[in-house]
Length: 300
Image (cartoon, rainbow, N blue to C red; front, side):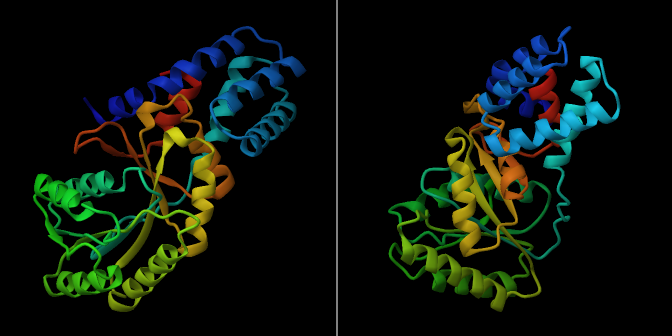
């Protein structure tokens, strides 16, 4: 299955929930208050969120009025443009050496994401080191080791309960001495009431900045698409501790509320960089704006 086919397949539930209703609305509809009310209901049902939905509708009404649009097909075109603009961030090209720290709450799929990222970079011919920085959760390092073996990459780990910052420090020295191109750092799952773990995350962030200043730094948080609007509060939580550069959205294939991608971009102004499109090691794809917008608006 090709890249775009995987993304479309992952969005099937969202497409089934939204695209049919949009198509029906835009087939011979009259551009009146009822039209916009129904469109608002459809967007909210996709978990786009009230703030971003209002933003989309306000912009749509303005452009329809300004361009004197009367055909619903032309309205759909403008709707897609507005959605595209919300999602369109300037994402820098990855440069090497590259250090990516992966954070997120428990159960979102951080370990799996790291395994998939390691596999991606390894297949591109990059040398990769995984750092088992989650020393809090039992068997976290063991699970990460399995992924490292599947991806055929190196892993640096210590015993459960070890100081996570020390693990990261040692791993960075090793990665630098080996001239490793990509270092992927796992971290323990955080919740708002785990103050010590959030402080540990800040400490790890400072250590990376101090010990590997020549590397390109990226902080990604992993979000579970099935949690819908709860994902927004998680972005807030991690932005308070570290500067979040991008989002890896997992389980997109398991929800009909894929519109949360727009809510995240519109309200949090953080781009979705990768999406999980299945459970296999190759099922991680770069987020494609055109494919996403086409899928939820056109159903294609």
